[in-house]
Length: 486
Image (cartoon, rainbow, N blue to C red; front, side, top):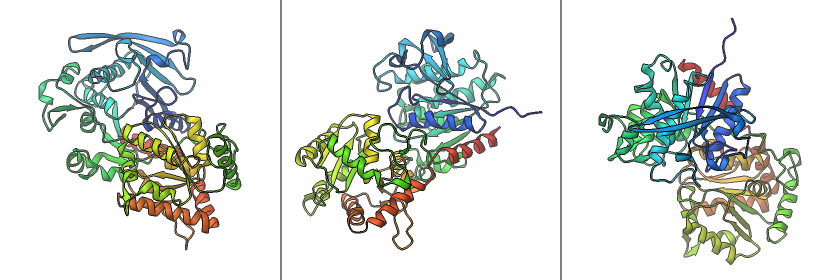
């Protein structure tokens, strides 16, 4: 008798290409596809945000079912839509909760995502799909693990379902007032440090951590770091002393169909590791298009959310009373950044672009095509993160032959190795101490190789391009984890 395929339902608040604010969306847009290639019946469920309507499929023809969701004394209707053109995906529609301009940042987020978690579990009663594994992601889905374990599992329909909870970023924990207990229909017995209370708040992430069957993080190093005071965001003792046995670090990948310099339609000249010299043509055309001097100098690129987590405080420091960015620009390099975020950093990069006209540019927006152009045109990719659960930027950079300069933390530590000229091994340059001085010194080292040892610099580029950061390995690891649970 043929064994039925493993069934897995990914639950996420954002998924590429439908809705995205960060790397979570990229992961959920890619990993289930790779699992399906390896024989898993992997599907996705996400909120049906109003701005998505009719953008990816005809709204009316994809309606599946509707039902009510109870949030304490409130009753809210929900509609389920389904499309499998890109990936088998269920979309949960509610004009009350999901018809807003942004994905998050509202006072009733606790209610919106309690509704989403309950809506997912109730959906299973109405569709022809009962998963072996429900794979939850970040704080928005934490309550689902609790509801399944302590309430829904009493029903034989749900009793065999297991949960995996993935931490994409410990910093964002979903902390709310006690009213969150009411919409989740939980007694105040849950408001204790042993359960989901965190410094007087209800923690949606803590619900996911405590009540899931397995926890994963998006890199092995981050799985260890979150058990420490520095990176655990207040939950380090819980993770290190109580939940350590169920934590697994599985390194993220990137979608090699999307991030492929050989076929990428957004870059000027396609190339492979065998024709990496075409990067210079990409740089020249990028310089011409975006107002930089057309000449052969080292181009440093940054594609990032512009927040403190990403290490931009290091760029505000001084070295011998000289602004660190002035020291970098004294090396006769060019610098471009793409992203949005905190005003103080945006203002800093506006000033940099003004001060170094034709040598620096700041694109304070986000554009996927422009991001690809920067990856292809840049010689060095700078990523000085204070902490980095996995990071996708350095993986994409290496895929495009762009040499990463990174701080040695989390997924950056797991994916970038410092170049060793004697052995010819290594894919970039790392610094460990969180300081603008050491960031500058590693950029200076990369600059030295670029100008004085071009063959070594090319070797570093090729080492990175030949690395395999596709989802194949991660998918196999997840399948092993799922199979160990059922």
